[in-house]
Image (cartoon, rainbow, N blue to C red; front, side, top):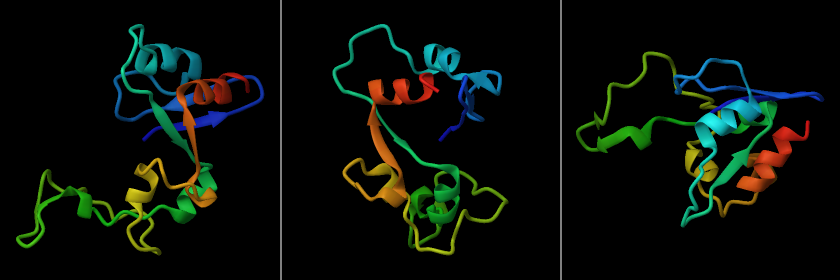
Length: 121
């Protein structure tokens, strides 16, 4: 998950899971982290959500991290901070499922649409 600010002149990416600086200009991030020079067999898709809607709708109870539900064993130590957005029931799978076409879960874009959306600020 990354955060991108989109402005009229340029977009900036905040990716806390990469070793790249942040914020970093979208075109530089795209080239260094997402741009691939070889032909891929599968297309890449992105779910783009507005921040306000994402913060209102997203809910994760960390159940996706369980490797043994009955024993309560997680694949990694769970974070010390509270779960995200638990006003609703767990809906992480709706954000990951590219077939979910509900406006409240953002818009699915192919790689070209994603690039154009943030480059043509």
